Length: 212
Image (cartoon, rainbow, N blue to C red; front, side, top):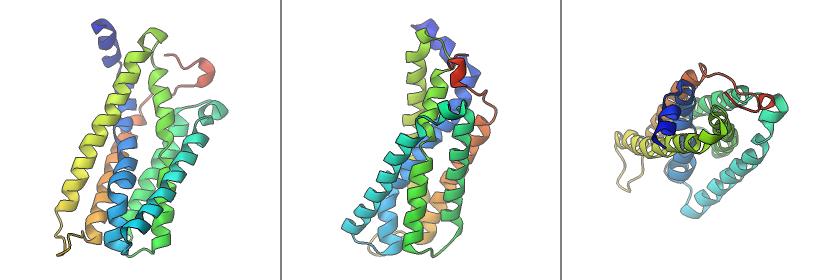
Protein backbone atom coordinates (compact mmCIF):
# COMPACT_ATOMS: atom_id res chain seq x y z
CA UNK A 1 0.00 0.00 0.00
CA UNK A 2 2.71 2.47 0.97
CA UNK A 3 4.77 1.68 -2.13
CA UNK A 4 1.76 2.27 -4.32
CA UNK A 5 0.97 5.54 -2.59
CA UNK A 6 4.57 6.65 -3.04
CA UNK A 7 4.37 5.84 -6.76
CA UNK A 8 1.23 7.97 -7.08
CA UNK A 9 2.64 10.92 -5.14
CA UNK A 10 5.90 10.82 -7.11
CA UNK A 11 4.10 11.28 -10.42
CA UNK A 12 4.68 14.88 -11.47
CA UNK A 13 1.74 14.80 -13.86
CA UNK A 14 -0.65 14.10 -11.01
CA UNK A 15 0.48 17.27 -9.23
CA UNK A 16 -0.21 19.32 -12.35
CA UNK A 17 -3.70 17.86 -12.62
CA UNK A 18 -4.27 18.25 -8.88
CA UNK A 19 -3.32 21.94 -9.04
CA UNK A 20 -6.39 22.77 -11.10
CA UNK A 21 -8.50 20.16 -9.34
CA UNK A 22 -7.69 21.99 -6.09
CA UNK A 23 -9.43 25.14 -7.32
CA UNK A 24 -11.97 23.81 -9.84
CA UNK A 25 -14.72 22.33 -7.69
CA UNK A 26 -13.88 24.58 -4.76
CA UNK A 27 -14.51 27.69 -6.83
CA UNK A 28 -18.00 26.78 -7.96
CA UNK A 29 -19.00 25.52 -4.50
CA UNK A 30 -17.70 28.72 -2.94
CA UNK A 31 -19.73 30.86 -5.34
CA UNK A 32 -22.89 28.78 -5.70
CA UNK A 33 -23.00 26.90 -2.43
CA UNK A 34 -21.63 29.46 0.01
CA UNK A 35 -21.82 33.07 -1.20
CA UNK A 36 -24.33 33.02 -4.07
CA UNK A 37 -27.36 33.49 -1.84
CA UNK A 38 -25.83 36.19 0.40
CA UNK A 39 -24.49 37.99 -2.70
CA UNK A 40 -27.94 38.13 -4.31
CA UNK A 41 -29.46 39.27 -1.02
CA UNK A 42 -26.85 41.85 0.00
CA UNK A 43 -26.14 43.36 -3.42
CA UNK A 44 -29.38 42.83 -5.34
CA UNK A 45 -31.84 43.02 -2.48
CA UNK A 46 -33.49 39.63 -2.94
CA UNK A 47 -35.29 38.04 -0.04
CA UNK A 48 -34.19 34.61 1.16
CA UNK A 49 -36.79 32.66 -0.81
CA UNK A 50 -36.17 34.46 -4.11
CA UNK A 51 -32.41 34.19 -3.71
CA UNK A 52 -32.81 30.45 -3.07
CA UNK A 53 -34.88 30.09 -6.24
CA UNK A 54 -32.16 31.81 -8.25
CA UNK A 55 -29.52 29.52 -6.77
CA UNK A 56 -31.72 26.53 -7.60
CA UNK A 57 -31.76 27.69 -11.23
CA UNK A 58 -27.97 27.97 -11.17
CA UNK A 59 -27.74 24.45 -9.77
CA UNK A 60 -29.87 23.13 -12.63
CA UNK A 61 -27.30 24.49 -15.08
CA UNK A 62 -24.59 22.73 -13.09
CA UNK A 63 -26.42 19.42 -13.46
CA UNK A 64 -26.96 19.98 -17.19
CA UNK A 65 -23.27 20.74 -17.65
CA UNK A 66 -22.33 17.63 -15.72
CA UNK A 67 -24.30 15.48 -18.16
CA UNK A 68 -23.06 17.23 -21.31
CA UNK A 69 -19.39 17.36 -20.33
CA UNK A 70 -19.20 13.61 -19.71
CA UNK A 71 -18.77 12.39 -23.32
CA UNK A 72 -16.72 15.33 -24.62
CA UNK A 73 -13.33 13.73 -24.05
CA UNK A 74 -14.36 10.75 -26.15
CA UNK A 75 -15.91 12.93 -28.87
CA UNK A 76 -12.78 15.08 -29.24
CA UNK A 77 -10.30 12.41 -28.13
CA UNK A 78 -8.61 14.72 -25.65
CA UNK A 79 -9.02 15.45 -21.98
CA UNK A 80 -6.68 18.41 -21.59
CA UNK A 81 -8.38 20.42 -24.33
CA UNK A 82 -11.80 19.71 -22.90
CA UNK A 83 -10.66 20.98 -19.49
CA UNK A 84 -8.87 24.13 -20.61
CA UNK A 85 -11.76 25.92 -22.40
CA UNK A 86 -14.00 25.35 -19.37
CA UNK A 87 -11.30 26.53 -16.99
CA UNK A 88 -10.54 29.65 -19.04
CA UNK A 89 -14.27 30.40 -19.27
CA UNK A 90 -14.47 30.09 -15.47
CA UNK A 91 -11.68 32.63 -15.06
CA UNK A 92 -13.36 34.99 -17.56
CA UNK A 93 -16.77 34.84 -15.86
CA UNK A 94 -15.26 35.44 -12.43
CA UNK A 95 -13.22 38.33 -13.84
CA UNK A 96 -16.38 39.94 -15.25
CA UNK A 97 -18.19 39.54 -11.92
CA UNK A 98 -15.18 41.13 -10.20
CA UNK A 99 -14.57 43.98 -12.63
CA UNK A 100 -18.02 45.24 -13.59
CA UNK A 101 -19.96 47.11 -10.90
CA UNK A 102 -23.71 47.55 -10.67
CA UNK A 103 -24.70 44.76 -13.05
CA UNK A 104 -28.38 43.98 -13.35
CA UNK A 105 -29.87 40.99 -11.58
CA UNK A 106 -30.60 39.03 -14.76
CA UNK A 107 -27.07 39.59 -16.03
CA UNK A 108 -25.62 38.36 -12.75
CA UNK A 109 -27.86 35.29 -12.65
CA UNK A 110 -26.96 34.55 -16.27
CA UNK A 111 -23.26 34.72 -15.42
CA UNK A 112 -23.74 32.48 -12.40
CA UNK A 113 -25.61 29.94 -14.56
CA UNK A 114 -22.79 30.06 -17.13
CA UNK A 115 -20.23 29.56 -14.35
CA UNK A 116 -22.14 26.55 -13.01
CA UNK A 117 -22.27 25.07 -16.52
CA UNK A 118 -18.62 25.49 -17.56
CA UNK A 119 -17.20 24.42 -14.20
CA UNK A 120 -18.02 20.82 -15.09
CA UNK A 121 -14.60 20.46 -16.66
CA UNK A 122 -13.80 18.96 -13.25
CA UNK A 123 -15.56 15.77 -14.42
CA UNK A 124 -12.95 15.35 -17.14
CA UNK A 125 -10.16 16.20 -14.71
CA UNK A 126 -11.01 13.18 -12.61
CA UNK A 127 -10.67 10.95 -15.67
CA UNK A 128 -7.38 12.63 -16.56
CA UNK A 129 -5.94 11.98 -13.12
CA UNK A 130 -6.95 8.31 -13.14
CA UNK A 131 -5.59 7.81 -16.67
CA UNK A 132 -2.08 8.60 -15.48
CA UNK A 133 -1.78 5.25 -13.71
CA UNK A 134 -2.17 1.54 -14.37
CA UNK A 135 -5.27 -0.21 -13.07
CA UNK A 136 -3.60 -1.40 -9.86
CA UNK A 137 -3.01 2.23 -8.77
CA UNK A 138 -6.27 3.84 -9.88
CA UNK A 139 -7.82 3.65 -6.41
CA UNK A 140 -4.93 5.56 -4.88
CA UNK A 141 -5.00 8.05 -7.76
CA UNK A 142 -8.71 8.74 -7.20
CA UNK A 143 -8.00 9.23 -3.50
CA UNK A 144 -5.30 11.82 -4.21
CA UNK A 145 -7.44 13.71 -6.74
CA UNK A 146 -10.37 13.72 -4.32
CA UNK A 147 -8.05 14.94 -1.58
CA UNK A 148 -7.19 17.91 -3.81
CA UNK A 149 -10.91 18.54 -4.26
CA UNK A 150 -11.81 18.61 -0.60
CA UNK A 151 -8.69 20.42 0.53
CA UNK A 152 -9.44 23.12 -2.03
CA UNK A 153 -13.02 23.43 -0.82
CA UNK A 154 -11.94 23.82 2.80
CA UNK A 155 -9.20 26.33 2.08
CA UNK A 156 -10.90 28.47 -0.59
CA UNK A 157 -14.16 28.76 1.31
CA UNK A 158 -12.34 29.89 4.44
CA UNK A 159 -10.14 32.27 2.45
CA UNK A 160 -13.10 33.75 0.56
CA UNK A 161 -14.79 34.50 3.86
CA UNK A 162 -11.64 36.25 5.04
CA UNK A 163 -11.61 38.36 1.87
CA UNK A 164 -15.22 39.45 2.34
CA UNK A 165 -14.52 40.10 6.00
CA UNK A 166 -11.90 42.70 5.07
CA UNK A 167 -14.67 45.13 4.13
CA UNK A 168 -17.02 46.90 6.55
CA UNK A 169 -20.55 45.52 6.69
CA UNK A 170 -23.65 47.60 7.31
CA UNK A 171 -25.73 47.54 10.48
CA UNK A 172 -27.76 44.55 9.26
CA UNK A 173 -24.60 42.55 8.57
CA UNK A 174 -24.81 42.85 4.77
CA UNK A 175 -21.51 43.01 2.91
CA UNK A 176 -20.99 45.72 0.25
CA UNK A 177 -20.74 44.92 -3.44
CA UNK A 178 -17.01 45.66 -3.45
CA UNK A 179 -16.46 42.84 -0.93
CA UNK A 180 -18.07 40.30 -3.24
CA UNK A 181 -16.21 41.68 -6.23
CA UNK A 182 -12.96 41.22 -4.32
CA UNK A 183 -13.99 37.65 -3.56
CA UNK A 184 -14.69 36.97 -7.24
CA UNK A 185 -11.30 38.46 -8.14
CA UNK A 186 -9.59 36.24 -5.57
CA UNK A 187 -11.25 33.12 -6.99
CA UNK A 188 -10.39 34.18 -10.54
CA UNK A 189 -6.71 34.50 -9.62
CA UNK A 190 -6.72 31.13 -7.83
CA UNK A 191 -8.31 29.44 -10.83
CA UNK A 192 -5.87 31.13 -13.20
CA UNK A 193 -2.96 29.81 -11.14
CA UNK A 194 -4.38 26.30 -11.42
CA UNK A 195 -4.84 26.71 -15.17
CA UNK A 196 -1.24 27.85 -15.62
CA UNK A 197 0.02 24.76 -13.79
CA UNK A 198 -2.26 22.49 -15.82
CA UNK A 199 -0.94 23.91 -19.09
CA UNK A 200 2.23 21.90 -18.44
CA UNK A 201 0.33 18.63 -17.98
CA UNK A 202 0.57 15.94 -20.64
CA UNK A 203 -2.67 15.29 -22.51
CA UNK A 204 -4.56 12.04 -21.96
CA UNK A 205 -6.47 10.64 -24.94
CA UNK A 206 -9.30 8.11 -24.50
CA UNK A 207 -8.23 6.41 -27.73
CA UNK A 208 -5.00 5.48 -25.99
CA UNK A 209 -7.04 3.94 -23.12
CA UNK A 210 -5.87 6.82 -20.91
CA UNK A 211 -2.82 5.03 -19.59
CA UNK A 212 0.52 6.73 -18.99
